[in-house]
Structure formats: structure tokens, C-alpha cells
Length: 123
Image 1 (tube, rainbow, N blue to C red):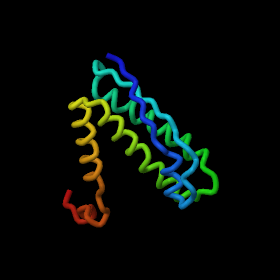
Image 2: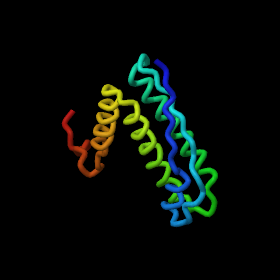
Image 3: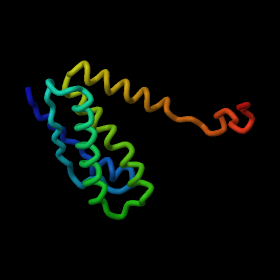
């Protein structure tokens, strides 16, 4: 079954809050295509591409916002949209996949000073 999940989110308002500007810009309509017959990985990748595209369009339209704030927004906005879309599907497999991805992403950071010293290895 193919469904279009429509999420109305004030991405412009989120951008305005991040920049300290007025949040009266309006909303951006984001439509996610969902088919429960597609593999979870494919659905998630489509959601990711849709969210990144919507956020990119919104950040391009933002005026008088620093590059730092735009970068900060581009890290947070897609995650927020994907989370909303995944929850709205009520698909337990997709929800679990999303949770696992978020958990794995948090554990991927390795601090360089914690890496073993390669120069002292015996070969």
C-alpha cells in the first residue's frame, strides 16, 4: 500500500529560532512517500533524501542568517523531519530501524587521543 505522509512543519520558524530572528516566515510542506511493501532501508533512505532536500530549500531561502546557524540547522532539521515521518508511519520495523540508526550514530565518534599508538606496535 502506497501512502503519502504529509508533515507540515515550520522549518522556517525553526531556522528563525536558531538565528534569533522572527519566526513569522510560515511553514514548509514536506511530503514523504511511504510504501510498506518496500524494504525498510529503501524507505528510510527515501525519507532521508526528502528531509535533506526540504531543509536545504528552507535554509537557502533564509536571509541574514550566519553560516554557522545554517550549518547547525542542516544538522538538526533532517533528523527532526525523519523522526516525525517515521513515527507517523506506525511501522514498527521502520521505527526500530530509525532507533537503531540513531543509537549507532551516537557511538561512532572516536577521539583520536584514545586510539592505540601505532608507532609502538611490533610487526
